[in-house]
Length: 459
Image (tube, helix red, strand yellow):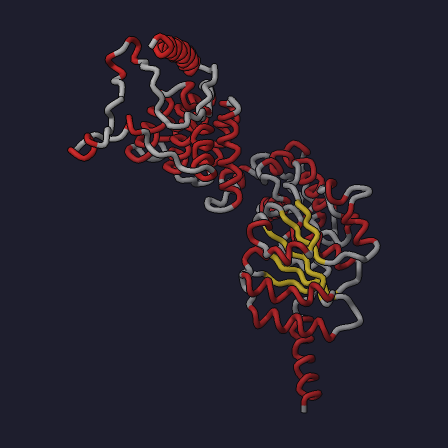
């Protein structure tokens, strides 16, 4: 009974898995142009020279057919799926493709069971959007990845360090793919216009290089988007009609910025925004601001980050930055889009061009470290609250010296039992005045200490 059951299950699995195999040559006219033009080998892949160039690791692994599991990390349209299909073709492997959004544990078990029964060919399991798999789904892959039953190729637009389980990540070669350059997209468009079997040659369209460059720039490094846009434009024209700048104007008017408001693009862009202000580049800071706003970022979020930046990075070099940032945040709440963009731009340019000091931020970090690593100091008795009879009897505040009763408000008294130094003022902007003031107080305290020592010696 068991062998018959296993055979039946295996046949069902094989039928299921064959339905997912990438055996289509891409020539189907019903497919989008980008799908039809997918490269069939690594030699047809355009761009990604940092991964596919001469002497690079990935081509060597594919040529020797010695790769295990691979992870491709990069933005949409950079060629993750194309690379996976090309690798499977070159190694003559069975190619099974699933999307993590639509798959489940039951389906994964079927695919893995079938792969264990297939001995004639290696099985390349391509999982698109692998970051969507939960921990149990990713863990399910580990035994078969470890044994070599499947060669996993995962594709993700999200940082694998945050979304892929450490055991699976450690068993895979990770390759980061970059957005395509304008030139790469133009070359792919030219190839599509000239390809008769899979491309658009039968429609006999012509296009100037400048026109294709303009369309490529609108694609934001997304080759799939560029090719599909070319096809949409072409299908809107008569056969043989030239693809002109006017013809791509509709696509330009509907262009959308690639920006995920709560994932990698969000964090990467706000990071670039903050670092640009910190580095004193108002132009770059405005660019990243505009990208966030065009991508639908909440202006109140930007306002909150400006408030943090005002104290963390501008700090005492220009304390009015905090007031401006707070007012900008209020403007985002009160005025709203689109007018509050003006307030944001005002604040961003101010922050980027302001003198910078992180002295108070660094000092706070050092204080936290001292509290965590050292014994906590008691409040000195001369600083303790003297309210109540018991406190007075204990001598609380008896020896406290009132600062306003002496010249320049400097008594020379210490305010910790074991004085520690955390704040190190910078000679930047308005903080330069603080440096001079602290130096003056230091000299006054030293003079007072000498006077007290002389009095003690005289007595």
